Length: 169
Image (cartoon, rainbow, N blue to C red):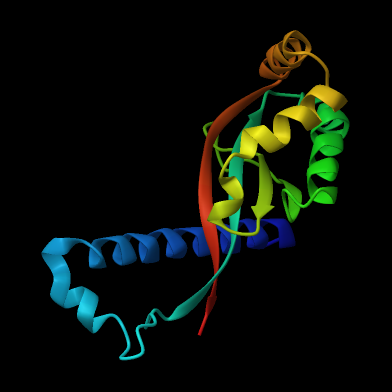
């Protein structure tokens, strides 16, 4: 198994584990399960969860059209890279990554776009922070719309997920 496949499997596994834990935490806080809430908290009021919460990752799954992966990567090297670097410089995001690999089947993605945020609160009023960067580096709404249309000709967005990174205790 190559390193990229292993990284994708680990990232997906961590994300699924985080989602399962998030579901458990949410159901524990509902009024119908007040005894669960009491037993899931320590006497000091802290969580007994077997993990510590870390940064939040936005993961976008992309399938490039046949023979268009390099064209899409060249496109990302322009506006996506410049806006991501500026957002990182301004502290809006912590980091961003692009993972490239072979699709497992015709319905699978071959590219992952990952954006790391410090926490969920970093998503509050995100457009108010990012729109000025996009206008400065990409251009008008019309120019952004044209660029989006062109990207649509070479790739398909299969979905996006918001996942919290966790560290097991």
